[in-house]
Structure formats: C-alpha cells, structure tokens
Image (cartoon, rainbow, N blue to C red; front, side, top):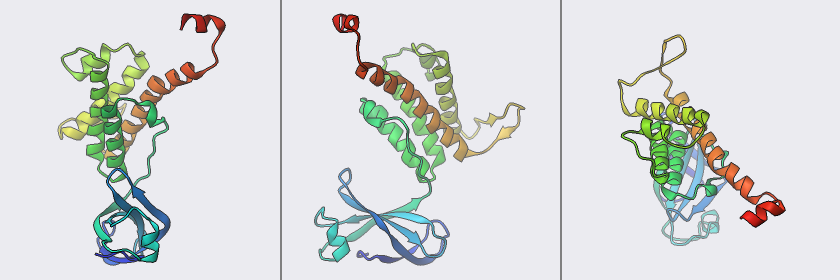
Length: 221
C-alpha cells in the first residue's frame, strides 16, 4: 500500500474495515529499524495505530509532499498504551537489561500483557547475571543480592508476575485469598516495580556521584 494521509485498513481495535486519518505531527523516522513511523486514528472507533513505512530516503518531508518513490506500508499495529519509565534509561549501562526492560514496555503498550510480565522477569534475571549472583534459581539469586529487603520484595513480586505470565496454573490472590485475574494490572505493576528498582539502583548512584564533594571525599576518591 502506498502512503496517503488517509488509509483504508481493518482496524485492530474495532475489527472493522474503515478509513484511518493521519495524526498531525505523528511522524518519526526511526534509526533503529530504518523505517518511517506514522500514527493514524480510526474514523470509526478513534483507536490509534502505528504504521511503519519503507522509503528511499530518511527525509520526512517526502511523505508530506508525496514526492518520493518506494513509500510502502510494511506493518501496522494497535497503540493501546502509553506507559513510560520514570527512570533515565541511559543510566542502565547493561544493554541486555535495558533491552529486556524496553521490550517489556513495548509489550505492555501493545496489549501483550503475558509477554510484558515475562520480559520484566527476564530483565531481573539479566540483572542477577550482571551482578554475578550465584544461586540455583531466581528466588535464591534475589535473596543473595546486597540490596535492601524492600527492593528484594519488589523483585520477588516481579518474579511472581512473570511466573503468572508464563504458566497458566500459577495463580495470584488478594489478601483475602481470592483469586485475581487482571493481566493488564499485573503487567503494569511489573513495570512500575521494575522502574522503582532501577531508579533506586542506578539513579541514586548517579545523583550521589555527581553531587558536590567535600575536601575529604575528593582526597579519598
């Protein structure tokens, strides 16, 4: 399909073949996949989708002017969430950990809640590997880290959410023992707990390292 500000597609939100209109200023060239990302809205249900386009150049103006060849729709998918981390991701220097966290976020924002929980769990597994923690399983590894009991509790919760996402028979309950089935909420909590952990582990260190130092601190550095 060639580029146009109005597209005829099947909406992944309302499952209807209808017209989509481009959102103003919803256009970005992505260096990660070398594709143009353009946001559209369904005229039937107003649900948002992200479209990805091949093109011959990186110039975004060519889409506005329809002046280039090779503009072809590669893929489109629903945009169902806009969760963003509070922690500065650039502080997470381990690329494997950061990549898993970003994938967990993308899964949540695209409605893939089981995958989100599993990727969040994978991110803390990567964190344990990065810290060179020895243990027979993830529970033991978390317990053997030098982090505070409160942060350990956060990671154990993320582990449990990941187990729920991966195993149909792993159930979660409220304080009264009632079974809870809310994958979206579990996925969101996975991200929020992981975000808080990373903020404590990485942002506090960064704040302390960059704070003004006493004469004694300078001498002992």
